[in-house]
Image (tube, rainbow, N blue to C red):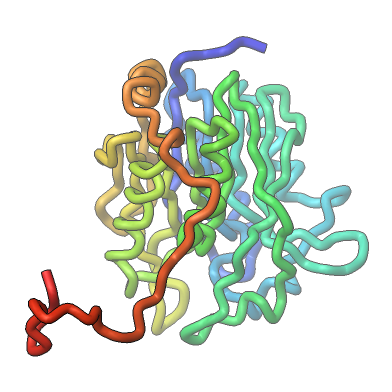
Length: 290
């Protein structure tokens, strides 16, 4: 396998047609045909682009791997354009009937090379994902032309433990495919940058845009972030389209060697809890001791 020092990455921000898998396949195919840049190495799609963020539609849209129109479509796209495809996510029905929010990954020949099941399910503030979906049990690292890439989906971004484990195993590029709500702009930006900064890795934070229903919208504003937390590509609006960046990893690897923060991680963190003030006469009880 060719090991590359850079990847030309395209990420598609889009608004899914709720509950209509075929319509979304046709939409993505059209957007790719009209807008994909030449020599793209990796295409990334958002979470549940196949059905939209509507948990009540998940059961009806579920597909098994062996007869999935989504898998067939993404495989053909990867082969046609000679690129890797990180397929956002679709609702996968396992052999035992359980449903998973799954991210498939295809190589340049259209072969399915990895499958990541969303680990953390968002079921608060009116969302009911865990009523339909079974959580995955592990992270997944996939090799993209020699670049170690760690996969996450949406709510996973709130759990730095998963990202840290990826980093310990040498991951250089994080993918977070999301369908993030418009009412949470600060967490979307801050958590995306934090995961990149604390792990000295590139981050693709890609979400859907546009309306979900009459009362709810996706946030849009997808970003590609470098290992220092700088935004190197973004779509600021709610518009559908591609953000594109050629990511070079040489400087990141140099920075990791100059600033090896993983060396400072302790095997165990013990915490002392003080329930009473120190017995110190110099301390003024009317204010905190400095």
